[in-house]
Length: 193
Image (cartoon, rainbow, N blue to C red; front, side, top):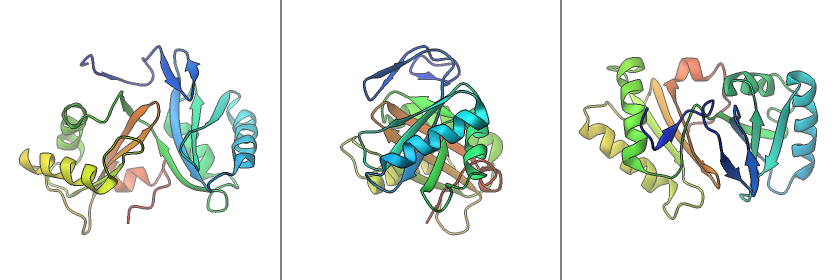
């Protein structure tokens, strides 16, 4: 595994909002209404009951919560998907499957290209990016990733996609979710307009 990327199960230190997290932490990003601190507390209480150990941290980005847990982020996402919060207080649930320290297109492609070729060979890939705090707009990020994927022979487009490459940035780094859409719908809550 390249030195610039770490699977979240294997990283030892990452700083989020001034908090230091230890080993074996997985991350799920959740979007709520801006300035809704009650949701963070209620969601954390819910996850503690369902998972036994979880922590919800408010991001410096309004409406973004970072959920830290010791179980697979897809498991945490499924618990949230089956909660009373979906659609009322929670509007997006993204499990972070891969992690990079910064928004670096070369690093992101080195992680995702083999997975795209394995899982989405011949299928159309939709690229989405939330480049929070990275000095680049979401659309610019998406266009650059799409351009680089096309250069590698990947079928990229927005009409009737079969796969999704989603990059979500927050103050602690950038998370990557890449899979077939039919599989993602089972463990994430994302509107891919």
